[in-house]
Image (cartoon, rainbow, N blue to C red; front, side):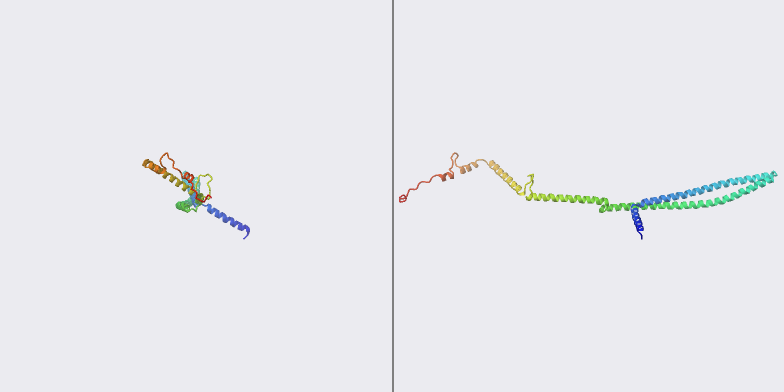
Length: 274
């Protein structure tokens, strides 16, 4: 096989595949139905033409019959008037007219037979066209339903071109969302552990937060105890102050003043100074 033949075969194969993808069975069926309707119309037109020719022959035959009757009357009239020669001429012409009528009758019978055949063919073709139309509509409806079912199935499974693009977009969005959530969680963990510092100073570690909560709790407890003491009365609080601090206006010597007071001198023992 030559190179040109191979190129031609490859081109035909690719063209056939492209045409097969582009072909819509519904459009092909509609086109075939249109062609059958055109053929039926041609057959009907042929029947009409044959019927017109037959009718024209019938008109000619009627005219010839009238002419034949007229010639016969003329022959009889000429013979009654003693003009045998005129009668003979009229009968001769009448014989030619009758021959034409015979020929036209033969043509008329032929045309009538053709008309009957064409009429029967037109009826049969019309029956086939109507049957093809019913079958065409059934095939189109079945093909449309199968196509819709296939598209729905592809949409549900995500293998169609449109839904595959949508599925990829959704998958990318989910991946980006998961990545951002993981990054946010990691940053929170690093901030809580102290591995990262918050440059804005708004974030505190867990130890600082716990100490602040404890200090706040102690302040609340101290304030609550003070409020309870005030509500309990001042009579019980005064003796405690007297016991702890002495009489008012008297200063209690502190430990430092007692320690700085000089100790009494001890008498010298005999013999130590000498």
